[in-house]
Length: 555
Image (tube, rainbow, N blue to C red; front, side, top):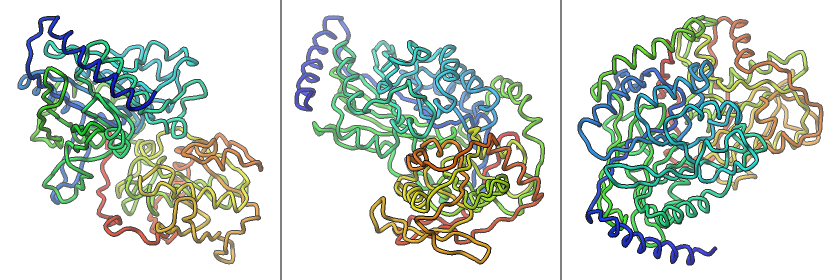
């Protein structure tokens, strides 16, 4: 179906809608919808600390968010509470409850629709189905193909139609197709083209007489902007996945990626509003959109709320409930296994773009754990490092926040050319801060951002007893990786297809790292020049130690 055909049909459907609306006797005129949204909360149920204007400030937490939502319900009309996905994974609350604790608090907060993110598939379709079966909110994803996955059938819809203030509002869900590579959906879940799926869903809603349409997207900010420029019939995209902060804030430590909302033109020259609310519940987005009787956006205003204490107090009953959920986890989290003499930096903007002292330490631990297998090189995807560790005691809980996925260590033999190909894949999406960026041990490498993706790695050297020597493309090296990238996750097809020796040790990555920390007792890793970035665009390089290392759950 051509774009022109789609647009013609959509306009016809929209015209029919106007008549249908009059036939129902609804009053003509404007309708203002208030969207309240979060994304990428990642099981961060407790408050965390940020440095804001030089001061340590507690932000977020589910008890405060619930109180804020309740306050909004008392002050505003026509509210619709949305979450754009990645509720799963990130703290020990997920390890313990597999999303069920988050679901309890989402019910209390009265969320009405959630999009599926990639991390909802981390444990496979079975555990996701258990989460969905008890959900009182709608769960949507228009680009999922579930015909071959009976466990999820009937639990996820392409879109939801909701009554808000007497008006019908359509919410279309989208999930990043990268889920195939960066999570564990299994072979029975298909991921379809997001644009084609969204346009089909818009058309279906218009045919039903629903002309106030919101896209709830877990594609990422950049992909949402692309979608906005192509999609016809929907003028609001509420996003997630890229953990993007939008808006204007007085704190020098914050660096928003764009305005809130970000406004782009669709193929008909109409404004499309794109919003996102950072990560971990640190921000709640609030977007007021006024539609006319035809479903056209005629006015809007928005504000992202940084969830500092003055925004709202914590809800007493939610806080009490959280304390009950915390009991089984706190004893485990509190066990001290080692001491960090410096901050161990695992911030997303570091581990997905450059050398990190925490990345070095984790990769070193992988080599240490598999030393009896003769491993020479360790490769750890930056997307698998999910938190920092502050200077001071290192607890079990903090390690599980850093490495929450339950991966195992895989030992495999790779040719030098396969190692170089893996490094090329790691830096191929540097600009997007993709999780495939590799932290390393046993080698050092340099890449040049002025060169095209696939041909950026300009130097690779392997550590030997006599010092570093150039990588031999035809030599065989014994390498340790996690089972996620060994199976082709994060685009590492070269690892999946490697034909040499391979064994999954069964060693948990988090447990192995804890064993290494216990062996060392105290750690003080530094940057060693393992990764060199050449021709980096001006303004991209952050001050390494400027990143505040947040205190974790239960600390």
